[in-house]
Image (cartoon, rainbow over all chains, first blue to last red; front, side, top):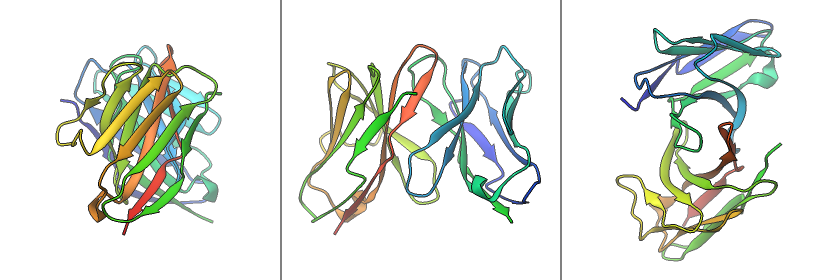
Length: 112
Length: 115
Protein backbone atom coordinates (compact mmCIF):
# COMPACT_ATOMS: atom_id res chain seq x y z
CA UNK A 1 0.00 0.00 0.00
CA UNK A 2 3.03 2.21 0.40
CA UNK A 3 4.17 1.78 -3.19
CA UNK A 4 4.17 4.35 -5.94
CA UNK A 5 4.24 2.84 -9.41
CA UNK A 6 5.91 4.86 -12.14
CA UNK A 7 5.93 4.40 -15.91
CA UNK A 8 7.53 4.29 -18.36
CA UNK A 9 10.95 3.18 -17.20
CA UNK A 10 12.56 5.05 -20.08
CA UNK A 11 11.34 7.59 -22.58
CA UNK A 12 12.84 9.05 -25.74
CA UNK A 13 11.35 12.26 -27.10
CA UNK A 14 12.32 14.58 -29.92
CA UNK A 15 13.20 18.17 -29.15
CA UNK A 16 10.04 20.24 -28.95
CA UNK A 17 7.85 17.27 -28.16
CA UNK A 18 5.82 16.50 -25.05
CA UNK A 19 7.18 14.14 -22.42
CA UNK A 20 4.60 12.38 -20.25
CA UNK A 21 5.41 10.31 -17.17
CA UNK A 22 2.75 8.61 -15.10
CA UNK A 23 2.49 7.51 -11.49
CA UNK A 24 -0.12 5.58 -9.54
CA UNK A 25 -0.48 5.10 -5.81
CA UNK A 26 -2.57 3.06 -3.42
CA UNK A 27 -2.33 4.82 -0.09
CA UNK A 28 -5.21 7.30 0.18
CA UNK A 29 -3.45 8.97 3.10
CA UNK A 30 -0.88 10.48 0.73
CA UNK A 31 -1.30 14.23 0.73
CA UNK A 32 1.73 15.60 -1.11
CA UNK A 33 2.92 14.58 -4.57
CA UNK A 34 6.25 16.00 -5.78
CA UNK A 35 8.26 15.34 -8.90
CA UNK A 36 12.04 15.36 -8.78
CA UNK A 37 14.64 15.72 -11.50
CA UNK A 38 18.00 14.04 -11.05
CA UNK A 39 21.10 14.41 -13.16
CA UNK A 40 23.89 11.79 -12.99
CA UNK A 41 25.98 12.14 -9.85
CA UNK A 42 23.66 14.71 -8.29
CA UNK A 43 20.93 14.67 -5.70
CA UNK A 44 17.28 15.00 -6.75
CA UNK A 45 15.95 18.51 -7.22
CA UNK A 46 12.30 19.43 -6.73
CA UNK A 47 10.65 20.21 -10.03
CA UNK A 48 7.03 20.74 -9.13
CA UNK A 49 4.60 19.44 -6.51
CA UNK A 50 0.87 19.20 -6.02
CA UNK A 51 -1.60 18.53 -3.24
CA UNK A 52 -4.84 16.64 -3.85
CA UNK A 53 -7.10 19.66 -3.50
CA UNK A 54 -6.26 20.71 -7.08
CA UNK A 55 -6.35 18.72 -10.31
CA UNK A 56 -3.61 20.51 -12.16
CA UNK A 57 -0.61 22.69 -11.48
CA UNK A 58 1.57 24.37 -14.06
CA UNK A 59 4.98 25.93 -13.67
CA UNK A 60 6.58 27.03 -16.90
CA UNK A 61 6.91 24.02 -19.21
CA UNK A 62 6.08 21.56 -16.43
CA UNK A 63 2.53 20.52 -15.53
CA UNK A 64 1.25 18.03 -12.98
CA UNK A 65 -2.14 16.48 -13.62
CA UNK A 66 -3.77 14.83 -10.63
CA UNK A 67 -6.69 12.42 -10.64
CA UNK A 68 -7.71 11.73 -7.06
CA UNK A 69 -10.42 9.19 -7.86
CA UNK A 70 -8.07 7.14 -10.03
CA UNK A 71 -5.17 7.67 -7.60
CA UNK A 72 -2.93 8.72 -10.45
CA UNK A 73 -0.80 11.71 -11.24
CA UNK A 74 1.38 12.60 -14.17
CA UNK A 75 4.10 14.98 -15.24
CA UNK A 76 3.93 16.69 -18.62
CA UNK A 77 6.99 18.44 -20.00
CA UNK A 78 6.03 20.71 -22.87
CA UNK A 79 8.50 21.73 -25.58
CA UNK A 80 11.02 19.20 -24.29
CA UNK A 81 14.67 20.24 -24.62
CA UNK A 82 17.91 18.23 -24.65
CA UNK A 83 18.74 19.84 -21.30
CA UNK A 84 15.69 18.08 -19.84
CA UNK A 85 17.43 14.73 -20.35
CA UNK A 86 17.59 13.33 -16.82
CA UNK A 87 15.94 10.82 -14.53
CA UNK A 88 12.57 11.84 -13.13
CA UNK A 89 11.06 10.49 -9.94
CA UNK A 90 7.55 10.90 -8.65
CA UNK A 91 7.00 10.65 -4.93
CA UNK A 92 4.30 10.87 -2.30
CA UNK A 93 4.02 11.46 1.42
CA UNK A 94 1.14 11.58 3.90
CA UNK A 95 2.06 14.69 5.86
CA UNK A 96 4.64 17.38 6.32
CA UNK A 97 8.05 16.08 7.28
CA UNK A 98 7.17 12.44 6.90
CA UNK A 99 8.97 10.00 4.67
CA UNK A 100 8.66 10.22 0.92
CA UNK A 101 7.78 7.11 -1.06
CA UNK A 102 9.48 7.25 -4.45
CA UNK A 103 8.51 5.79 -7.79
CA UNK A 104 11.00 3.68 -9.69
CA UNK A 105 12.17 6.53 -11.90
CA UNK A 106 11.98 7.37 -15.60
CA UNK A 107 15.07 8.02 -17.68
CA UNK A 108 14.16 10.73 -20.17
CA UNK A 109 16.24 11.35 -23.27
CA UNK A 110 15.41 14.31 -25.47
CA UNK A 111 17.04 14.06 -28.86
CA UNK A 112 18.13 17.27 -30.56
CA UNK B 1 15.51 28.82 -1.42
CA UNK B 2 16.42 26.14 1.07
CA UNK B 3 19.91 24.70 0.66
CA UNK B 4 21.34 21.46 1.98
CA UNK B 5 25.08 21.01 1.81
CA UNK B 6 26.42 17.46 1.72
CA UNK B 7 30.11 16.58 2.06
CA UNK B 8 32.16 15.00 0.77
CA UNK B 9 30.82 14.68 -2.77
CA UNK B 10 32.93 11.61 -3.31
CA UNK B 11 35.20 9.47 -1.18
CA UNK B 12 37.34 6.40 -1.72
CA UNK B 13 38.26 4.36 1.33
CA UNK B 14 39.92 1.09 2.13
CA UNK B 15 37.91 -1.89 3.23
CA UNK B 16 37.57 -1.99 7.01
CA UNK B 17 37.80 1.74 7.57
CA UNK B 18 35.01 4.13 8.53
CA UNK B 19 33.69 7.06 6.55
CA UNK B 20 31.64 10.02 7.79
CA UNK B 21 29.26 11.95 5.54
CA UNK B 22 27.91 15.32 6.67
CA UNK B 23 24.62 16.92 5.77
CA UNK B 24 23.98 20.54 6.73
CA UNK B 25 20.91 22.69 6.23
CA UNK B 26 22.37 26.13 5.50
CA UNK B 27 19.43 28.48 5.76
CA UNK B 28 16.71 26.65 7.65
CA UNK B 29 16.26 24.42 10.65
CA UNK B 30 15.82 20.80 9.67
CA UNK B 31 13.62 19.08 12.20
CA UNK B 32 13.87 15.82 10.28
CA UNK B 33 16.62 14.46 8.09
CA UNK B 34 16.47 11.43 5.85
CA UNK B 35 19.31 9.30 4.55
CA UNK B 36 18.96 7.45 1.27
CA UNK B 37 21.04 5.00 -0.66
CA UNK B 38 20.87 4.80 -4.43
CA UNK B 39 22.32 2.12 -6.69
CA UNK B 40 22.95 2.84 -10.40
CA UNK B 41 19.77 3.24 -12.42
CA UNK B 42 17.61 2.60 -9.38
CA UNK B 43 15.35 4.66 -7.19
CA UNK B 44 16.22 6.12 -3.81
CA UNK B 45 16.02 3.67 -0.95
CA UNK B 46 15.33 5.18 2.45
CA UNK B 47 17.84 3.99 5.04
CA UNK B 48 16.83 5.95 8.12
CA UNK B 49 14.98 8.95 9.46
CA UNK B 50 16.49 11.14 12.14
CA UNK B 51 14.98 13.84 14.30
CA UNK B 52 17.15 16.35 16.09
CA UNK B 53 18.18 15.14 19.52
CA UNK B 54 16.72 11.67 19.26
CA UNK B 55 17.80 8.30 17.95
CA UNK B 56 17.39 7.58 14.28
CA UNK B 57 14.70 5.24 13.03
CA UNK B 58 16.16 2.69 10.65
CA UNK B 59 14.32 0.95 7.84
CA UNK B 60 13.99 -2.79 7.91
CA UNK B 61 17.15 -4.50 6.76
CA UNK B 62 19.45 -1.55 7.44
CA UNK B 63 22.12 -2.35 10.02
CA UNK B 64 22.07 0.41 12.63
CA UNK B 65 25.49 -0.56 13.96
CA UNK B 66 26.98 -0.28 10.52
CA UNK B 67 25.31 2.95 9.45
CA UNK B 68 25.55 5.29 12.42
CA UNK B 69 23.40 8.40 12.20
CA UNK B 70 23.76 11.41 14.44
CA UNK B 71 21.45 14.41 14.33
CA UNK B 72 22.95 16.54 17.07
CA UNK B 73 21.58 19.91 15.95
CA UNK B 74 18.83 21.34 13.80
CA UNK B 75 21.31 22.01 11.02
CA UNK B 76 23.61 19.00 11.02
CA UNK B 77 23.19 15.28 10.55
CA UNK B 78 25.98 12.80 9.93
CA UNK B 79 26.07 9.28 8.52
CA UNK B 80 29.05 7.15 9.43
CA UNK B 81 29.63 3.96 7.49
CA UNK B 82 31.62 1.78 9.88
CA UNK B 83 33.95 -1.01 8.82
CA UNK B 84 33.14 -0.34 5.19
CA UNK B 85 33.20 -3.14 2.66
CA UNK B 86 33.02 -3.07 -1.15
CA UNK B 87 29.31 -3.89 -1.05
CA UNK B 88 28.75 -0.60 0.79
CA UNK B 89 29.90 1.27 -2.30
CA UNK B 90 26.94 3.35 -3.40
CA UNK B 91 25.55 6.86 -3.78
CA UNK B 92 24.33 8.24 -0.45
CA UNK B 93 21.93 11.18 -0.35
CA UNK B 94 20.54 13.16 2.55
CA UNK B 95 17.34 15.15 2.63
CA UNK B 96 16.14 17.69 5.14
CA UNK B 97 12.59 18.63 6.02
CA UNK B 98 11.86 21.76 7.95
CA UNK B 99 9.30 23.77 6.02
CA UNK B 100 5.75 23.33 7.21
CA UNK B 101 4.61 23.47 3.60
CA UNK B 102 6.05 20.03 2.84
CA UNK B 103 9.50 21.27 1.99
CA UNK B 104 12.09 18.58 1.37
CA UNK B 105 15.53 19.63 0.22
CA UNK B 106 18.10 17.12 -0.97
CA UNK B 107 21.84 17.24 -0.68
CA UNK B 108 24.01 16.75 -3.73
CA UNK B 109 24.94 13.21 -2.74
CA UNK B 110 28.13 11.36 -1.82
CA UNK B 111 29.66 8.72 -4.03
CA UNK B 112 31.33 6.17 -1.75
CA UNK B 113 33.75 3.68 -3.23
CA UNK B 114 35.25 1.05 -0.95
CA UNK B 115 38.33 -0.68 -2.30
